[in-house]
Length: 537
Image 1 (cartoon, helix red, strand yellow):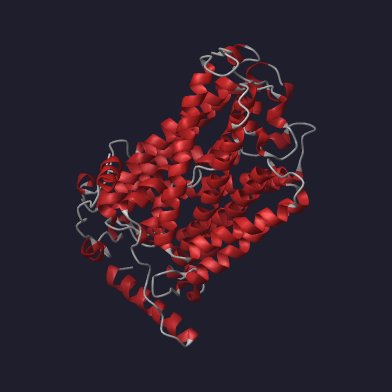
Image 2 (cartoon, one colour; image 1 turned 180 degrees about the vertical axis):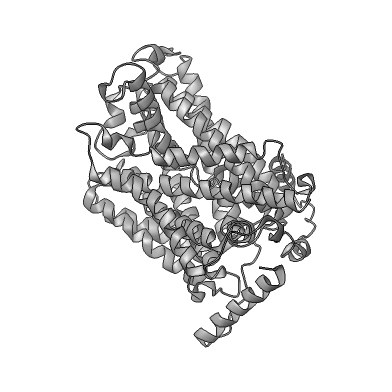
C-alpha cells in the first residue's frame, strides 16, 4: 500500500466514524506527554509488583544465583527487544506504536495478531496489579473485605486516565519518582544491612549463598537437572517483572518532540535493567535465604515481599509499613499505566481497521474516552481476588500476561527484522536514523528466538509426573496458542501477503512528525533546570 493510499484510508476511516455516530468525529490524539513524562515512564513507569512481590516465589524456586541469572538473561532479552523497537519508533513515532509498524513493515494480518494480543495483555495485567494492591492493603487490614480496596483502586486508576494523557503523565511522573526513590533506597539499605549496619548488627555477606546454597533443587530433583529447572522457573516470573518496558512505543503518539525524546527514553532502559532489576535481585538474594518459610506463606499479604522480610529479619519494625505504602503506590501506578496502554492499543487497532471505528472517537483534548471506558471494564476482573484470594489471582494473571507480553516482544523483533531488510533493500543508511545500534540484526534474532523458547517451555512443570495442574497449563499455553490463531484469522480476513522489502513505506507521516517538532522553552526555575539536566543524560 502506498503512503498516499494509507493516508486516504485513514482519513476515510475517521469520516466513517463520524457518519456512524451522527456527530462530528473529533481529531486524533494530542501530543501532551513532555520529555520528563516520557523519561520517568521509561525508567519507572511499569516497575511494579513483579519486582517487589513476584521475586519471593522466584527466590524460593531458583535460589539467589538462580534468581539473579534469571533476571540477567531476561534483562538481555529485554535489551535486544528495546533497541529493536527504539530504532523503529524513534524513526516513526506514530499512534499505535509497534502495532501500526507491523502493518507497515510485515503484514496487516500480523498487525492484527499483534494488536489484539497486546490489547489482551494489558487488559488482563491491569486487574493483576489491582489484585496485588489488595494484597498490599491486606498487610494492614487483613479482616476488611478486599472488595472495598479493589473498588477504591479502580476508581483512582479510572479517574487518572479519564483526565487525559497530560494528567496521566503528571501522575506517572510522581508515582514513578516514588518508585525510583523507593527501589534505590531499598538497594542501598540492603547493602548496609548485608554489611552488618542493621539494628541487630548481623553481618550477612554471602552467607545464604553458602547455606542453603546458590541454587534450589527444584521439587527435590537432584543434580544439574534440578538446579537448571529451578533457574528456568524464574524466567516466566522475570518476564512479568519486565513486561511493559515497551510502553514508550504506545506513548509515542502522544509524546512531544518524539524524535528527540524517544531515543533518550530508550537509552534509559539500560539504567532500569542494570540498577533496579539486576541490582534489586542481587540484594534480595543476599538478605533472604531461599528456604525461608515467609517466602512461600499462603496468607496472600505483602509480608511475603523479600524486601519486607529482610527488614523484619534485621529488626526494623516501622520501615516495613513505610515500604508497603510505597509498594501500594507502585501497584496503583502500574495499573494506571496498564489502562492507559490497553486503551491506546485499542485506539491503534481501530486506526488500523482492526476494531470498531467508534474506538477512534476522542474528546476535544484528544482523549480516546470510549477506548478508556471499554478497557476499564476489564479491571472488574480484580474482584476475583475477593472470591479466590488475592495471592492466587495474582499468580494466575501474572502467568497469562507474561506469555502474552513475551509474544508481543516476539512480534516486535519480527517487525524489526523486516524493517531492517526494507532499509537495506531500499538503500537507506541506518546511521541517518534518530536512534540505531551496531548490535543489529543479531540482537533482534536473539530476542526473537529467546522469547519463542521461553514461551514454548513456560509451563513445563505440569509435565513432571504428579504435577499436572489444569490452571497452570491453561494460563501458560492459551496465550501462546492464541497468537498464531489470530494471525491465521487475519490472513483469511485480509487475504494479503507479507509486504515486500522494496514496497515498504518509509516516507508517510515523516513530514507531519517533523512539523510537530517544537523548540523547548528555557527552564524558568533552578529546579526545572535541574530536572531537565538530569533527564537529558
